[in-house]
Length: 74
Image (cartoon, rainbow, N blue to C red; front, side, top):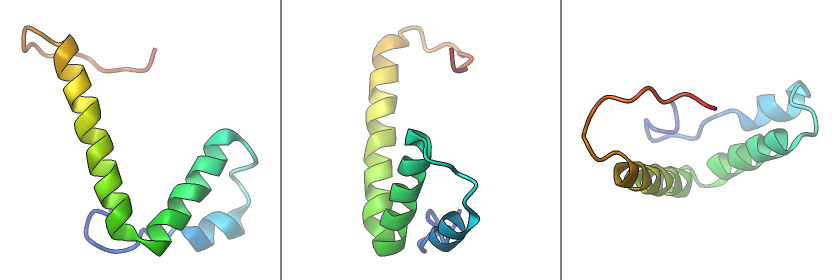
């Protein structure tokens, strides 16, 4: 929420100190995003907005009837 409000997410320190994330690819991605948000919150926000916009455009190509869909991981 802090990131979208215009500030740094504030999770880099707790993520590094916590040690609960392990060494999985998902943990690496979490640390990378936390560091990026710490160094440049504006560029992370911009990149996430672009990613979300691209995802929405791709979804719009698949959804033709404008109906309601239940989006759940497979």
